[in-house]
Image 1 (spheres, helix red, strand yellow):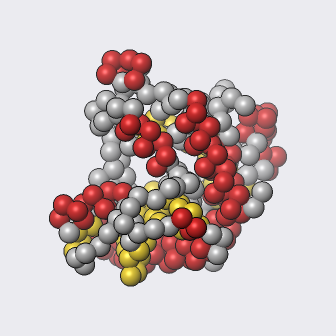
Image 2: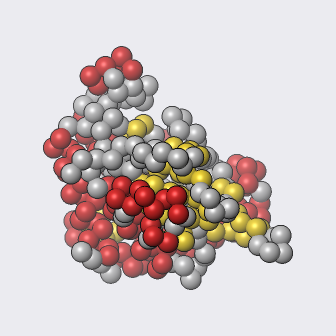
Image 3: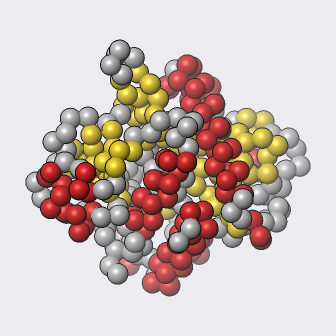
Length: 309
């Protein structure tokens, strides 16, 4: 199976191209076509080769969580059945089947809504230096991968492609989106994380942290309401650990992109060496084939554990 790096839909207007998703406008006002490619990024950098089938796995797990958590907050998902999409999409069914979603348009809230149940990653790095996480004072004596007494909401900026997200304090996040929206998002994000983490735990998986994105849509009365947008609880946006091997005080094996990040670092990747003449092979970073296979296996395993074959 070859990786689909770029979608190819002549006649459809490409609205934006993200790290993974290509977004197209449609002939139906108020709806967009989201196409999950097999591209993969790490440290906000898109690697030159992808992970075959990854886009279909991301779509499958997002659809599962949109359905499972729909009682907490509505979301933008409409259908993944190409035959139920606008007519101009139908001829691309072979390319899109399993990796495309028709979604409602929304005004995206410019905030990455991150919820952390365990101290790891950038949160652990900050804590070691300052005793804080996103500027929030933490108890002393925490060890790497330790579970927080309660999940914490730690927002970051939503960076443009090629730029890096920035961890920010709750106060700064409220300044960006307004206090009312911030309060609603922070509460909903923790509620969503808690429900997902409880379910995952019953399947032998720890949801260490995850990122949510929210949007605003206008109702018939003109009032705006919050919905979930983008992907949901995928291995791209979440840190999943096998519960059977969990041991605080050290890094954990993971079902997410940490395996790829670790390989990049071991291969000499550093921020600033993303592409160009200083990148691997002089043209950006290429993932070794054994790492491609290893990454694919981790994605497939967590999807199977969470939602079955």
